[in-house]
Amino acid sequence: MTKKIAIFASGTGTNFVALVQQLQHWRSDVSIELLIYDRKQAAVHQRSQELGVPSVYVNFTKYADKSQAETAMLQALKQRHIDLILLAGYMRIVGPTLLNAYQGHILNIHPALLPAFPGAHGIEDAFKAGVKVTGVTIHFIDAGVDSGPIIAQETVRIDPTDTLATLENRIHQIEHQLYPRVVKELITEGVV
Ligand code: GRF
Image 1 (cartoon, rainbow, N blue to C red):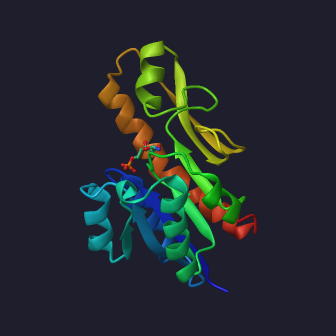
Image 2 (cartoon, rainbow, N blue to C red; image 1 turned 180 degrees about the vertical axis):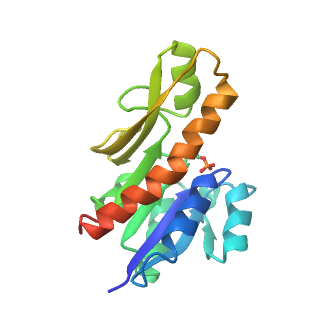
């Protein structure tokens, strides 16, 4: 049975591209079927078109609440028989509608060593705090903000010569290797 993957993203989409490039032709029984994005102008949409990955735009303002939006998302996921969801810069907390339907099958990437520096500005927060080591975390999600069981982490040193921009650059490079690698391992081991 083919393992069907959906990626949720709201932004630039560099992790989306890394995941598609490294997973789409990895194994014939693994397929990235869908991008779900929630910001109409998000660059990730353009990237999905370039890579030939179908996409669904979810306009949250059209729905009365998150559970209704997620019900529509769930329908799109079920239609395509999606087994695994990868959050890649998706800037919303996933609610119970999706969490219950995909328990243990939703992963997230966060650009810091959780539980340190959760939230939308993980790289900047670590840089400003003056820590000497930060990194990247891959974790299962739960109902919280960047919480849930940690699967893998990779450290990144912050050097005295680093600027926020050079640090961001290094973190993103690690992200683009770590996320596809961890997904491959989890699939190979039958965890997801
Ligand atoms: C990444 O830093 C990821 O860790 C965080 O959001 C950012 C998304 O970047 N969750 P991109 O859109 O993949 O370029």
